[in-house]
Image 1 (tube, rainbow over the protein chains, first blue to last red):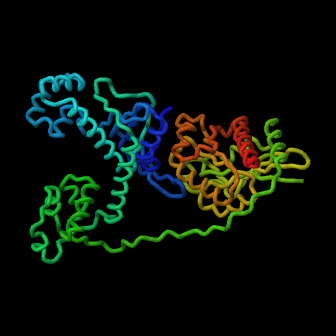
Image 2: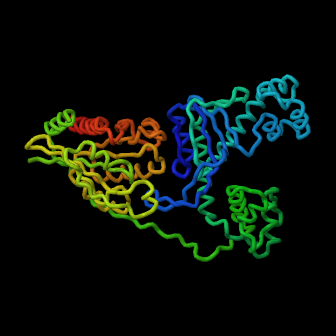
Image 3: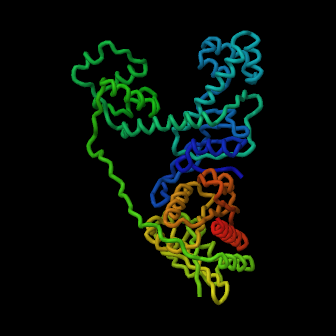
Length: 294
Length: 177
């Protein structure tokens, strides 16, 4: 029977750990979380019920090793992967797509290697990086319904590169910590940004990346960070990372909305542990005999 | 007459009442109340507000009492009282509801802190189509290898007997060490 659940209850890292430790073979499918408008109480807290929408990602494993990953909104075929990694130019990718649209990835890889477009190492490392990028992206998802189907594997024409999950889990945990730190630093994306006093001096001699310039161009106390991210087509993590860097460098300042104080969770006190009951072995044996006879 | 006590604990709707009902020789003295919150009502109609109480009489000199704790956190002030003097405890987990796993682990740790008595984890509702296997649950709940995690169907008497026997064997083992 498949493992089913939601990432808000059982995270991607926990799932990877389970698959690794149990040496599982199969495919993990993650679905879009469709909000229902209905509420449920889980562990004393109210939350909105979600149902599984369309598929968003699929990740496959063989005996506990990661072998394949795809995102629904990304074209994960070999040409796109090599193009994204800079191993094929846009023009080369376009021509190959036109000429080899019905060729499976494995056969296409052989053709490209034989034609000296790429090396075998290029293919393996690009596929590996693509797989890892997909999985690392999944680590930031924290709501979606999932299902793990035992023994379901991707079609054989896909190139599968086995990757040990231990390192992925460690790197994933590091990234989650980074995300948590960023979230802690910037808990509310509805805050806005403004330039500090004397911005000209601060920006003198500073080299910003294209993404940083794109964010800087929208800095205005009227624009929320969320709006800036949307305008630049950036994920929450990307915008948080950039804003954090700009703020640490003193290039922008956060404009905090009022009423952001966090409540401090009440601490419970506990009585000392009571003494163990004094029960003799013969009593336990009598209980065993009785229960066996019921 | 000597009485001994075991506690059956676990999250809301894990199957504690059903577990006790399957094995108790008396009609379970249940303190169930109709559920008031709509969210909980979707899961079941009645719930345990203070405790369930079952009994297994061994002979004229010895009686085993089974106490089921209320699953909701708002009644956790009762847990410590119920835990006092227990011989061991069973943590029931609804294997088909991963949203309750974190709470189950938290309850397990709470009871371990109350008393250093042996315990077992019962992976309940194994007959449910969405149930996680006991092996997967062990990893999900991070249960140490030495702790028994047993597949269980609380409405099946044999399954309940097996869980209680395994707990008693663990108690015996601890007495030997």
